[in-house]
Image 1 (cartoon, helix red, strand yellow):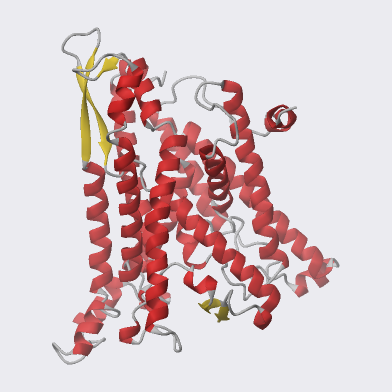
Image 2 (image 1 turned 45 degrees about the vertical axis):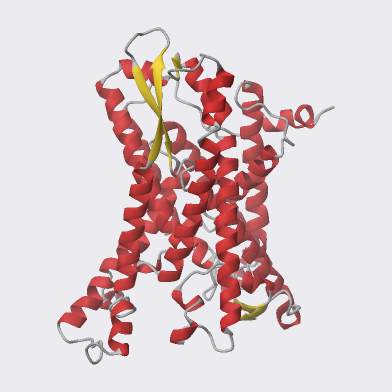
Amino acid sequence: MSWKEAAEPVLTRMPVVARPEGHVPFKRKLLWTAGVLGIYFFLTNITLFGLDAGGSDIFGQFRSILAGGQGSILQVGIGPIVTASIVLQLLGGANLLGLDTENDPRDQVLYQGLQKLLVVIVTIATAAPMVFTGNFLPASQSVGNALGIGVTGVQLVIFAQVFVGGILILFMDEIVSKWGVGSGVGLFIIAGVSQQLIGGMISWEALGASGFFASWYGILFGETTLGSTFTAEWFQNLLFPPGDLLALVTTLLIFGVVVYAESVRVEIPLSHSRVRGARGRFPVKLIYASVLPMILVRALQANIQFLGQIIYSQMGEAMPTILGVYADGQPVDGLFYYLAPIQARQDWMWFLGLTPAGIEPWQVGLRVAIDLIFMLVGGAIFAVFWVETTGMGPEATAKQIQNSGMQIPGFRRNPQVVEKVMERYIPQVTVIGGALVGLLAVMANMLGTIGNVSGTGLLLTVSITYKLYEEIAEEQMMEMHPMMRQMFGNE
């Protein structure tokens, strides 16, 4: 008996959000999307019952990518969804699953069920260490005494809440993907990063934080001084806080580069085999795989650091120094230090005295090099996996062109011929685009951004927003011209 036959009774019975039977009007899609977004914000502001004060966010700087909220119902965010996707992509890329998700409807159902089952397993595996080990989600002794269930009982209550939150965000993502605009994962990333970005711009000192505008208000009206004009101190205060012009330039540069890269493309001419004069173009964008594979790369790094935090919480100072030396809950030496991504200027600007005491320049250089290699190579590899598993590869694209009745002028109307033409562009562009996005993410983290948004989070937000804009434009076009829905297969 194959694993598919053994697992089919379980996988086919996994709860699923029903697909719409017909076309969903654009306004209704917007309502579904807005409704899910409202629920997301609501749940991220509900504190876990029984939680004591003093817990630390185990995801740290990865929070903007993994969404959710520390100490809230959505504690785990989209982490389990992304981790399950990594596992399935690796298994699918190695052809270990034996599922034909393109042509076999049964295998499609099994794949979706397997993904949900993995999300449930990863949610449990992620939530359990947060609740039962360390000080990440400490249980309240007073609540345990009041309810007569003790600390262990409160921990079980907290675990149940975190687990339910992980399942809720899974189905919220599915609702947006089937009934709304875009994807839930992308929507939640935009929501979290936008909050952080807007807060970094307009937060005021009276609210407990000083944003970019508040800082410059103080500078212009003499409440904050940059030091003597044109001195080293003046330039440092201008580029870094309180002036923070470097963060503003980096943020605007990332916006500009991503929007420009989204518009750079190689266009392959197409013509209809039966309708004379009907022509078109197949665009192969520079960022062909989008920036979504970056979620997978950063999630892999987050899981590595998560493992380090768990080991340290259990072993403390007895942890082997070769694995990691921790100070204030963060690695400052050892394997987990070198595998930790560069998150801010304080992680590498030793020449300005920003790095913690005791860290040598060669250690900083090695960490930067490892992060850069990890992101360049990881970005390219996951971009290739993404293209192959989402039906964007040369073979799948050739079949799509063939089925649409189009062909490449000057070539025989044959899927193998079209596939060979696509192989000249898609694999190379995919690798280059994935590596480019990885480079941009590292550079943005190193230079800093407004609101201390992570470089990957900012890249994802800009790219997802751009694609959301394109999808909204396409939806509006199909609303205006119903016949186009048949062409795109959306009837």
